[in-house]
Image (tube, rainbow, N blue to C red; front, side, top):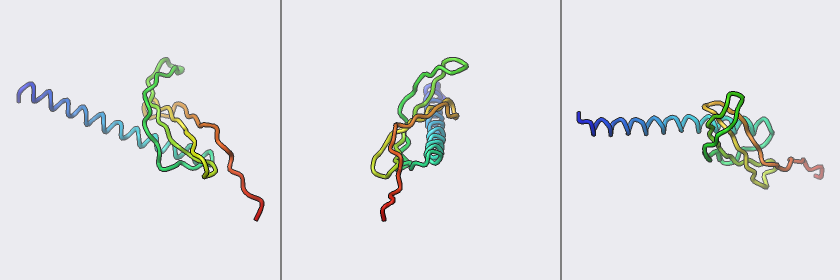
Length: 109
């Protein structure tokens, strides 16, 4: 096997590894978004979790590279709001929810 063929094979294997790893992080982010929405009593919309960007965060152990995922949710069914998840590795470091309206039950019937 020539050096160029070996280099191409290693490049393809590296791309497949990155894709596989990204898919795992995405599924983890979707689980975390669903859990956060359930805990807050809000509804995750359209499985709308999406990778946003990489961000450097200062943690207790120093500077770390995190992945930021965004998702959309609703509290009343009338408006969409945005939430963010900050993952370091496969662990949730922080999450943010855009201020949202609290769902109120109608007393009139």
